[in-house]
Image 1: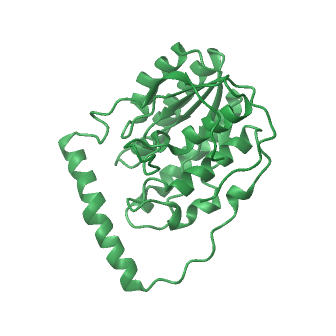
Image 2: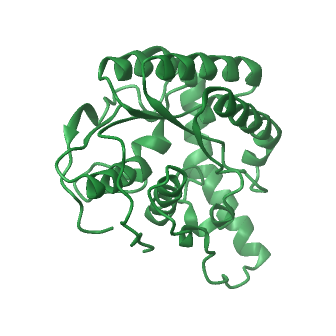
Image 3: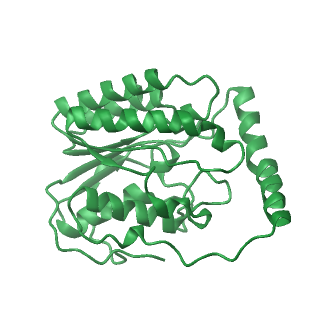
Length: 268
């Protein structure tokens, strides 16, 4: 497991609230107690390590949430918590759906960013990850790229920090992704957290970008077998939920709804 070791910079933030969907909830980065950690929790740990006993952290992200839900539900709740740092990463679930209007998504996101900035919070955004060439998901590449460019523009207009996940080459390695090909592994979450720490000026360690050792070549038959198993285990159930109007997060509540204090972690 890759770990961050550069702990020199002190964080200017003492109240961090994370907003979004399963990516920020931290799915596929299990703690061992049935909950998930994820990049945002790991970033919060970095903040706590720099200001021991002073940092409060809330995570309102819920798997399956669309951007409209994040903006309509989570953003007002976050503003009420009076944060000085907010990460808002969403829209990926929208882009996966046929007919998604990227211009509408961008307008909703910018409205939320403007509200957060007006409330006095610094804002951390992130572009979509490049979906690359995997079947089915690669059909969203054009919309994802367009949405990413809109996020860069929003960030520039409102003075936000932006994670360029599209350009994060380490995430193009399939070993950074869980079997569902949608969520990061613990290694992937750790690297995104380290990248976020660098973007926020908390670290100069860029080793999060270093690629893994080369993977042995895979036979075409193995690739096809894995693709078929992925469709059976993950794509089919996802389509079924869409047809029933259901979401994986329908019964899920935010895992950390209040900005509770954090103890400095021991595993950075």
